[in-house]
Image (cartoon, rainbow, N blue to C red; front, side):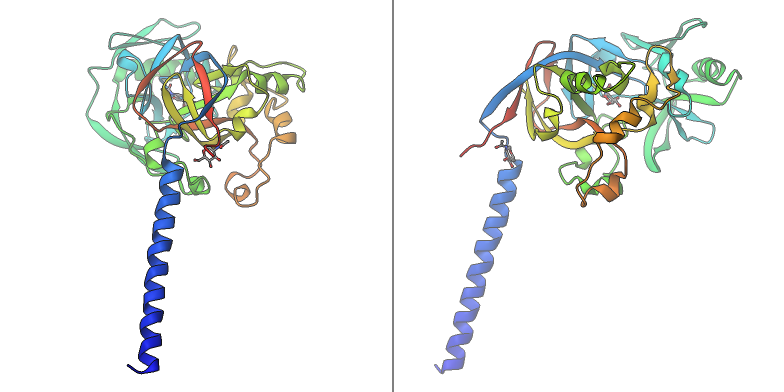
Length: 333
Ligand SMILES: *[C@@H]1O[C@H](CO)[C@@H](O)[C@H](O)[C@H]1NC(C)=O
Ligand SMILES: *[C@@H]1O[C@H](CO)[C@@H](O)[C@H](O)[C@H]1NC(C)=O
C-alpha cells in the first residue's frame, strides 16, 4: 500500500470516528437537557389557583386543579377553552373591550354561566355546541365551535349595546393545534405541545407574590396578582426568583419554564372595575426596570417588560392544590 492510500484511509477513519463521537455527544447533551432532573430544592408553596375558562373574561378561583397538556382542567372546564370572536371571525380580547374582565364565568356540570353587572345571568350548555369551523389567534388558525345565538346576543348587548356583533366559541379538541409563533422562536424550550387551546403564549403561567409586592413598593396604587391573570401564585420566595427557574415541580407535577411572560396593555385593566388605568400603570413602572436586554431575545419582544413565567407540562398529568410545595431543580453534579 502506498503512502497516499494509507493517509487517505487513516483520514477517513479519523473523520468517521470524530463524527460518531460528535453525534453521540450531541445526542447525549440533548437527552440530558430533556431529562427530568432528580434533585430538587423547595422554594415556596402554591398560594392561589386561578382558571380563566374564557379568554379575557373573569376568573374562577380553585383550591385544586388537574394539569393536562392543554392546561388546567376541572370537570367540564376540562381540556377546553372559550373565547369571543367578531362577525369576521376575528378574536376579541379585553385590550379592545376592558369591560370583558367584569363578566364572571362559572361552570357546573356542562353548563357555563356568564354573569355581568346590570344583566341577567345566561347559561350555555357546552355539550351542545355548533359544527367545527376555523378562526384564528394572532393570525394562526385554530378550530372552534359556535355556542349559539342566545349568548351571542347577550355578549353583544353587554359589550356593544347592540343585538349582534360578538359570538362565543368553544375549542373542540383535546390537544393543542397551533405551531409555535415565529416570534417565539427566540425561546427554544417552548414547543408546539405547550400552545394550549386559545391562550396567547402557553397553557400554564406562574408568578410569585414577592414579585408583585416588590412592584407594589414602586407604585402609588398597589395591584393584586389577579391584575396579571396567572394560573398559579407562589408564596415564600424572593422577588423575581421565578425568572431564574428552569425545571419546576409543583406537588408531583413537573413543568419547565419555557418563556418569560412579557406584558402588554392588558395588565393596565383593573380587574375589579374593568377599566384601563389612565396613567398606564403598572405597565409604565414595569417598563422602567423589567425589559429584556439580552440582544438575542430583544428583537422578538421589544419593550414589553416581563413579569412571571410561562410553563409547559413536562411529565404525566397531575393534581395541584393550594399549599403544595414548589420545587426547582438543583445541579446534579
Ligand atoms: C392560565 O392562565 C392564562 C393566562 O396567564 C390563561 O390564558 C389561560 O386560559 C389559563 N388557563 C386556564 C386553563 O384557565
Ligand atoms: C436545571 O436543569 C437545567 C437543564 O437540565 C440545567 O441546565 C440547569 O443547570 C439546572 N439548574 C441547576 C441549578 O442546576
